[in-house]
Amino acid sequence: MVNKMEFGLIEYQAEQGRVVLNTPGFDFDSFPQLGERLLAALPATVIEKQCDADIHSWLIDFEECQMFLKAEHYSESVWFESLSGMHCQDELSFLATLFQQGFCLPEQ
Image 1 (cartoon, rainbow, N blue to C red):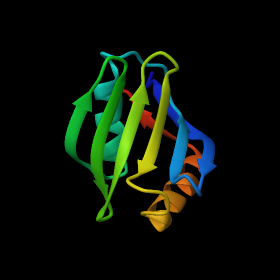
Image 2 (image 1 turned 90 degrees about the horizontal axis):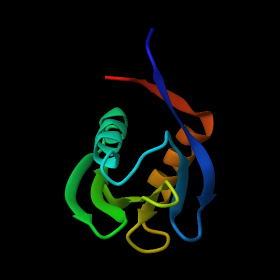
Image 3 (image 1 turned 180 degrees about the horizontal axis):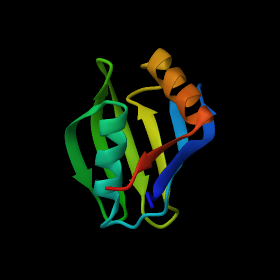
């Protein structure tokens, strides 16, 4: 039996440049594996990773557009965020459409 991870869209905040995701549950220590698998499926690459007390902030490149992938431990919130407002609007819109359709990744 293959377990699947489900990803979907919670909200697309176009004016703020943010795509909020529905993801499988995670904690601070397990997010890096989840994040890496998600980015590999898009495909996107990590430029830089930063971890604070309860949040992961990864600067990523997706289709030649730099944005953040953020994950907050306590609320289990994951979102893509532009570097500033309307930056990468086309790419964020594409991601919102992709996640609105939902998709699964097989467990490794």
